[in-house]
Length: 443
Image (cartoon, rainbow, N blue to C red; front, side, top):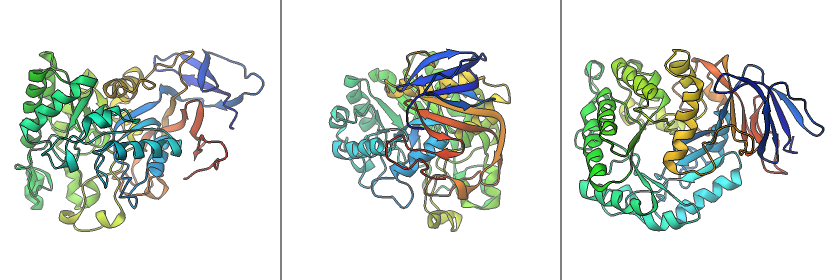
């Protein structure tokens, strides 16, 4: 299946129309019902599947370089392919930190050699993520990786003067600062959402205001310097309202929400299982409902996974000692189907926007986030919304196993992913796009 000619049949497009899609030489060559496979084409029956433009994740932790025991660019992009993603954005909190042109170019090259998805490095805002001196922002922007998104994710750019300078600096090349909104003074030692359950469990609470105060400050800074701001992993109802207010004023701010914050609540912590420990923390049902509403009405621009793999020893310990974070790439689209589509809050055209068009636009990924049209690069995600499956941590493509959805039945399964016209995931198997590489590349 390496000739690059495919006929995908039995599909439903995001607008609800029935169609087949022909692919040749990496591009979509025909879209119409009841196509006949020409000589040399491989027919792939995907009856019941929705065809979406290839998904783009603006928030992925690939861990390489330096933390390869948790994830590598190869294993992370394999997980991306299984989840329907054709492009992922690698966060900067690696070792060494991606705060120089050399490191981002290394990550970019690793993505190209892996072949399962495009990997776009996100550069650090400050040296070593310490929040003090600006990193080599200009050099990273001018590098072969052409970085346009900068974030100290995992740490908040807390100093307002540093944040202002960063916002001003990226204006010259149309970049964006992606802020991890967390006031460190209000969250020192915090373990989970501050509320009734944290009190019952005796775990130090993480107040919503710690997130909301930084969001409020930074939208005002972005407005003051007329620069682009992106808010990472929004979790609170108050945060949604601040973003809604800022957009009504014309401030150039975008925001993301993770699938796990759309599905899980702080009640998960009642199990004392550190698999549910995440930064920012799982919030209340009221917050979940506000996040869903905000994503549906466009206040929240995109879904981003915040895929955060950890080795077993970092999670199989007492809650207070466990690492923050959970896997997200392989289950993201299923959760969006379950929480947003089957509930009637979003249709598939809106899913295409929130998970492909909008993230590519925010990050300025020119070859991604394109509609499924004749002549377009064949980056295509297929999902059967009627197909359910049980999550099994032992079957994930990631090098880590810290999925909070283990044993859970999810509605909507990715059936295939096509990256530049070739299948990276099809018939339950991963397949590298590189000639001469193994057809089956993982679980």
